Picture 1 (cartoon, rainbow, N blue to C red):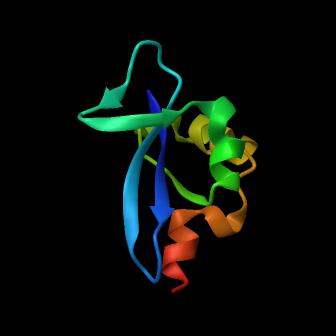
Picture 2 (picture 1 turned 90 degrees about the horizontal axis):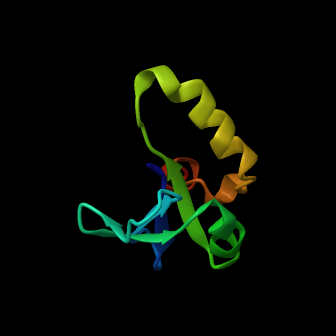
Picture 3 (picture 1 turned 135 degrees about the horizontal axis):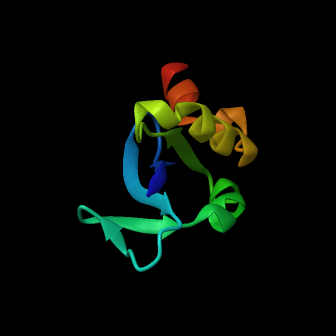
Length: 87
């Protein structure tokens, strides 16, 4: 299951969709969009400057998904919703 969408800020307010964070075995892409890594890769993606957003998977699992997202320790300035909303 995809858990996050990763974005790469490429100057000014331009944002380019780069792919999904996904730990599901055997997937290279989701609907043609690449898997850029799994949970273990998040710290590397953070250091590369990626922005992240938590996607809706299913309504009844949101508490667990929010906790998972928070446990990844992504800095607030790399949250796509807060970063892009602030510009």
